Image 1 (cartoon, rainbow, N blue to C red):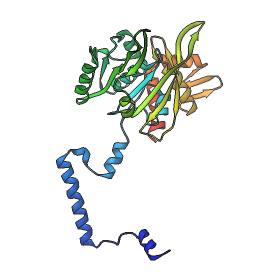
Image 2: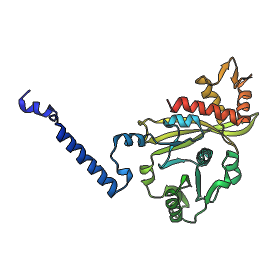
Image 3: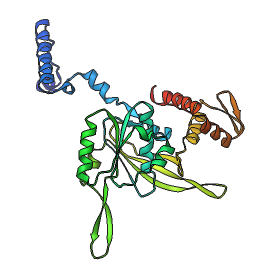
Image 4: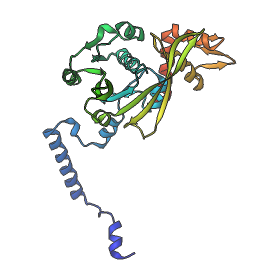
Length: 301
């Protein structure tokens, strides 16, 4: 290796105390100037930057989906897109996010661009309608204005249902296709994109009681790129069947003890899966405690 090549690999010479103090002073002055000229978020502190990367989240209401997302839920202050065909669980999932935010004392808003908001269904899911802001704008511009006003305040979740519109592909044929306002902008700026799709109907005693859906994580800026998927069960008029996935995941991680075909839950023995799920459904406090324990194990270690 020549002398010139060796120079490329040499580090800077060590600074003496005077030069080191001068360098630190100059850097602190530049950082202070940035904070003065712009705002607090311009602070170039590595430790603070690392903390902001660990975003606070709001649960989706599904442990399986929270696990697939890798961070325990949807990040606050970020744009999230949920897309899919009709009746594939998009609105149900959005309502569960609102429910989880309200459980933690958050304020939420629902922009009903399709004028199709079902108050009764939202209450069945667990949304507190009395504390939910609901708007039904008559144009996309008004929807945008409402969102711009709300996100600057103390709102935790703003749901816009939906941002898609129908446009004629051939006026003479009467055929329409769905397009997203703004073209590719929503997909580009979204931190997370999730695609929902129906799998099959769920039956109980030859009667359809719900559907199974797949939620595929198409884009996730907050964790290493990986195409992950979560399977959810949705009961008609009820929302996500969280009791079944709590039982499944808690049994896998030892929070609930499975003995033969039965389960030990909170000191009680339930002889079968159906009985265990019914117990969790009827005892919200027990289900919430198990869910909190699971979240501590999965996301806070």
